[in-house]
Length: 353
Image 1 (cartoon, rainbow, N blue to C red):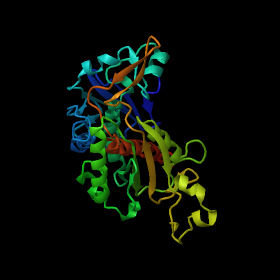
Image 2: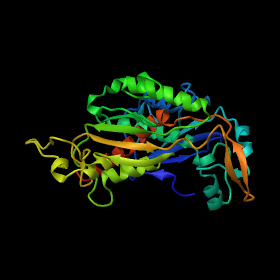
Image 3: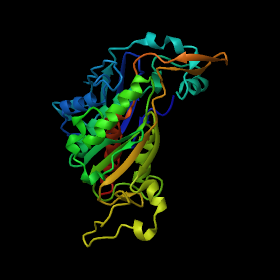
Image 4: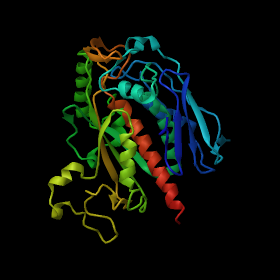
């Protein structure tokens, strides 16, 4: 199976399955001499882990990271950083009913057709649990970036949207509620909606907005390796993501150029930032902001028609522990992938200086 690695200089390779012994990864290209805060890594894992509130999956995993190599006396050595995250709360029997069937909107069918075999326990390699390894890499990438600030938050659940620009939000409130929404009035409505959807045995989608601040000018390349193109690829590689837009995004397509252009100030900053901090594929020093759309979780705790490996249609109901809405737990994953992209471009940019 190809496609288990991401990055050029700062490169992460992940391994493991949802119901295997452990997940893990190898981070290659991390510079030597970076002070590693293990508590900061574990904090990011706590933000992503299952069972953290009543509106997410109740699988209980501590997600304790064990560093195996690449760090000595609290600093990186420049060698590959190996780590594992043991799985401790698998309930594989919850998935025995789908051994011979394919869940709608999951990777089950295409996975088996491509590889001729699949681990049906929780989706195996295609499970969103794989993203735990990305969060470890992202936490280390954040420590490489130091002064660059990355804040992601839930900006919508279903039809409930924050109606304020991010500049008017207090990012310190993101972790103050289970939804991870910095607008408390919206957060209350979102949480109530998720709970109602959960009672129905259904699921709901939403969006996450990410804001990256203090980015230096010059990250990214003007042709294929545009900074926003790599951010888009990184975000679209996250399970359940269906869309990505940065800056003015699709709204910009409705505007006139005279309204959309970011006019310069004398110091090189711009009066507006509809470009989203990136022009010509290269960071311009302004805030980078983008939005990521997540579909509703595909596993429903209600009956629906499914395809069997005998090419028959049967009625089946989802079982096990699943998120009614994935976006609250996806916030640290979005931040992690953004940090990995930025760390990679930061190191690439240093090779030109």
